[in-house]
Image (cartoon, rainbow over all chains, first blue to last red; front, side):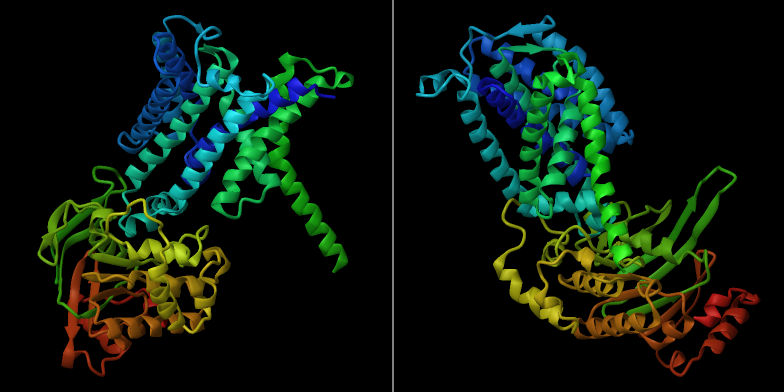
Length: 300
Length: 264
């Protein structure tokens, strides 16, 4: 079984990936824009926050800058698509590749340690809580605030226009919605959330690393799809809750898999497990409905 | 008033598939007129509508909508003046959004959208009133997803959405063609009712000559990207499909070979 520390660790990382899943929900689901920029904007957020914290900035201000940097990266991807007519997937890959260099430039080296620095978590350790519970508490608050803000935004006039853009762009234009501007705004906000996740991840793990973004898109997608399988995303707020639930379930599943000695899995198997989990999450709902279909047919 | 002057548009210019869709198309529609547009396949009906809506930009010519030159404006910048119902009943609405959300999108057509709640309480009365005029019971299903409605119901809602806020012109692009005959008749009746009640200026493309003569106050026939005839008032009264065909043949010296025009 999981130790307490491993359990809280899984929830902590799960909450951070919940923010990533929010971003991926915005791009993949709301805008129907397959965006791989996140593999670059996650370490970008981490790099910006880490470097500014080392420079002596207030950690929340540094985190805010990480969000802005993520938004800028998202805006670049969207503009490549909207203004230069580059296929959305390719545009995001171009930005992702470019960000690898940008991130190295920002940090000046492949990684930056934050172990002795003051982070957003530092003041919270004064609370009467176990060491491994503190990040969970703070990240629950951050994720909750992000969820409420996103939910309100999706219900606003602009948010509704964004949802229409992704669902039926032709209709959206006919209603006077500038679909290009909506895509830029949406992909920017999406990557801003991922930048926030990166900044928080660096601060809770004590380092920013240029390779920490590898596979973030897959983990985010796994969280999104897994969450949707558990919480039916029939409304916006349910879809957002599904993101967080999915991310936490995903991290717990990984933690269990790695802790279950009889499976003989090791840390290096992580990406393989992720790929298998994503495949299952995509295939299982279809299998379930086809079984249900067969059952109801045989009854009739 | 809408005026289109000498519109020209060629698709695939300089390629073997070069296709001149509009060849000097001109048409003026006055305030309050309901014009039906007919023509065989490839006559340029849909292209003309798309050009008015802004979905395609013309190579040359000028489009003026209520004293504003919109020739170079993209669709979303014209939307405040130009309302539209598509041929595909699924195209005019968002199936993933609820009925009230779709109507809330339409009530802000062509206006700035802010960060206040999209579905406002003060809209509800208006939404319910207009939905109940359809007699489909939709006023009780405001929160239902659009995707749960049938094609005919969705087309009826599209029509409501297009007339929820004032426009300079309402474009109807064969909006009954994809429906079964009974539903098509219902949507057509609804169309004439809304246009009459709100005194809308409308342009309706149709594939059926019969329909073109039955509704509206003026009929225009397109052929090869131009207007071949334009009849209204006394000339149009009592006209039948065969008279239209006669007119067409006299104008062009051509036999009409598109069966669907005769059968429609």
